Length: 99
Image (spheres, rainbow, N blue to C red):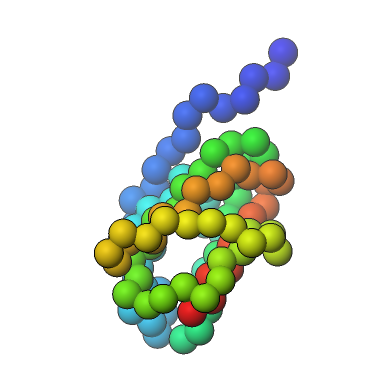
């Protein structure tokens, strides 16, 4: 009998991204890679398929687009805090935020 995970782990980071003002506050998925430019953040994440996940960032800039594995994704923004909730459809997640 295979049961889905009932809880996740939050990895607190408060990690400043290279050459930009954004910070990753935490992620419930493992962060395998981070790339950032002045106009884009790309995170390669890993999580068991079917798991609900969340990533939180601090950003003062307006988001032009956000995608997960090439599909448009939603987010919540309150003041400077950006929260992205998603269900991992596959183990490897490619999250791209464009400014």
